[in-house]
Length: 115
Length: 113
Image 1 (cartoon, helix red, strand yellow):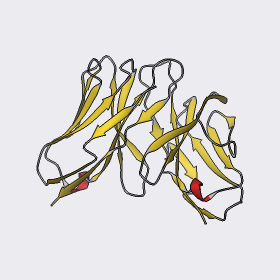
Image 2 (cartoon, rainbow over the protein chains, first blue to last red; image 1 turned 45 degrees about the vertical axis):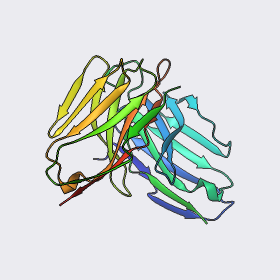
Image 3 (cartoon, helix red, strand yellow; image 1 turned 180 degrees about the vertical axis):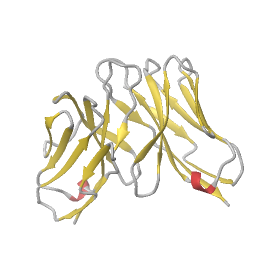
Image 4 (cartoon, chains in turn brown, blue; image 1 turned 60 degrees about the vertical axis):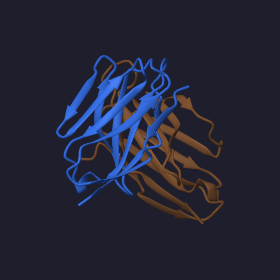
């Protein structure tokens, strides 16, 4: 039973298209994240939501828009895709900051290729 | 702002050796530190989570230590096996406010049979 699941696993699309990546967690966590892993394997946070509220918004182009319909879901919508958006995108969740036992769990990643 | 560095970037060892992976972080006011494993083309698997009040955490052949005062954590792997080959990442949260986790650049480990 997957804890953090992302769909799709692979996504190939043309420049200029709009696409979405979905993420769901069944851990009952109240905080979810989107990370981008670039070609050098460096993981960088993009967004974080706590109880459907945006709490972290790094310097990310506004073509990227996260949406959290409920605290178990955090979707990532990308408009006008560019070649540089090609990367692996990871969704993660944790129980937030107010408990010491805050362990982050990650999805399997979505490999986005923009051609 | 938290910065996390891992040394070495890559490591190749013969099977059976014990090895140590290093992680340094700049902001020592952390709640915890987490070690992950990433296999090629796959997601991240959590290995160990060390609370700020702990100095060590063990799981099987893995032992992670945390020294907040010096801003360092180590991951010790005993009796390495080819199946341990992967990239190992440490992640430390930023202090204050909501949790924001900063990852290190990773150590790519290859265990040679």
